[in-house]
Amino acid sequence: MQVIRKTTADLRVPPHLSDYARTRANFKWSDVPNLCEGMGPGGCNIGYACLDRQASGPAADRVALRFIGDGSTTAELNAHDMSYRELAQCASRFTNVLRSLGIGKGDRIFTIMGRAPELYITMMGALRNGTVVSPLFAAFGPEPIATRVNIAEPVALVTTAAIYQRKIAKIRDQLPSVRHVILVDQDAAPGDAAGTVNYRQLMAGVDDDAPIEPTTATDPALLHFTSGTTGTPKGAIHVHGALSMHYITGLYALDLHADDVYWCTADPGWVTGTSYGVIAPLLHGVTAVVDEAEFDAERWYRILADESVTVWYTAPTAIRMLIKAGAELAQRYEFPALRFIASVGEPLNPEAVWWGKKVLGLPIHDNWWQTETGGIMIANTPAFDIKPGSMGRPLPGVDAYVVRHAENGRLTVIEEPDVEGELALKPGWPSMFRGYLHQEDRYQKCFADGLYLTGDLVKRDADGYFWFVGRADDVIKSAGHLIGPFEVESALTDHPAVAEAAVIGKPDPTVGEIVKAFVTVKDGFTADDDLRLELLAHARKRLGAAVAPKEIEFADALPHTRSGKIMRRLLRARELGLPQGDTSTVETDTPIRETSA
Ligand code: AMP
Image (cartoon, rainbow, N blue to C red):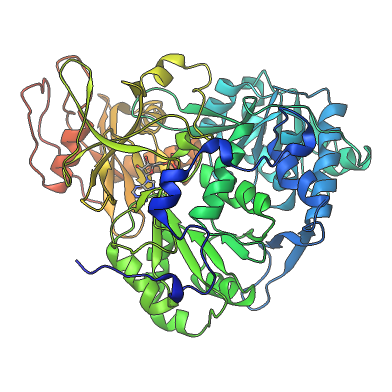
């Protein structure tokens, strides 16, 4: 295997992490600088560290967020800047808005909107108020929204008039906890949608000065939903103290320096877009680019070039889509400012790493983490040699193990290199999730023998590099989004024609996996193309495009275990033409009947 060798002399900027072994050996979380000193003893608040602190320091007039409007064409990027001072002032006003509505510490609110300035202001204003924010992906359909709202019981939703009318108005009576719906649109007047209030009017009615709520490191700050194989989604609770992790990983994994122009392409509806699209860049006082539009290869090259992006954090699906768009398109642009590219969320194939080096002049640096870890755990940092295909090595402060589950329920740590096992982490890093809201059992099941079990299968090589093998469970990663099969199956079985549904991830060269459903139909219904289209549309309407299945295959029966569980693994093995493993527990199954696509 060809390794990409690095020497510090090759790097344009001296990296924050240059001596991995020494930094790891000496690292203590208690040595991380206290970014909330100004709050007094014990005070800790993400909003304070990101904004109040910056607005009263040398970063005050630096551009904090540079929004590129979604109405802008690729020919003319229409940017709107907010300095740290302005953002801090707006966030502070929003803190007052929440107070004026009687929303306080420990209450929860949801944001359901695109990457507009109001999203960032709302998040920061709420964090300053000690109010827990749950950013939801705007492309979710009404069903995933209702499920998550009913778990978290937020008192308010902050959204747009269009999203409200399309997705929320019709389910509003199923969301009893929601006292206020705040519409951020400029022209959405109260009364446009009954029972809503207008963000701009609320903001105009309060003053700038809102003292920070005296939160501490263990107070909840964010709630990020993630999916498991079974049951409802899980709301991972993150605390204000997580900011130390966002700060350190911004330093070591992303190598942020104050003069960087940084672009994280993830949406804050997913954990990456919050930890690294909002918090880490603001903690470091850099300028963060926010593209309000969706992926477009030419537009992205244009942004990288025109905004002189120096550090770029993106995802394998996006890189593969750029590769698909062809090298000629990239070659029309130059990226002299770009010095570091990182990627997360799904396996980064070696070809993508090399493509970066060839076409953009820099290899792509893979890193690994998940909703529960709150921050980057394993990384290829600027000074590391890259072994393309590997996720890198654990960062200072992170202890990662490969473990095997013994029969007696205990774990054995696998010391030998290149042996597959589950990735386990030693708790203690500051952005570790503190629970799944209202689901203590599921939280407890993540731990054994003092280690946190990630659900990922990996190998570690003799040099300490980790290699992703696959998931230990049935969750699906599609375009970087984690999708719980159960949520999709439930939406399908709600259709009157569906008897049973089983959902798997089917490998796809661009988005990693697509959601594929196997469906049996009830007597009296015909499994034909009309029904297939109807089911695809039904799922899309309920779940939203990001979650709904892209393929549906009708089956006469689905394989079950004797205890009645559908064996998704078997369906997946058959789909891929892989060995089916031990099928001795299969109770019912008949061959899948193909219908033409
Ligand atoms: P999420 O909680 O949605 O961020 O998804 C986390 C999951 O994404 C992990 O548990 C992995 O299965 C997968 N993942 C994240 N980063 C990587 C990576 N660099 N390589 C392979 N899989 C990854």
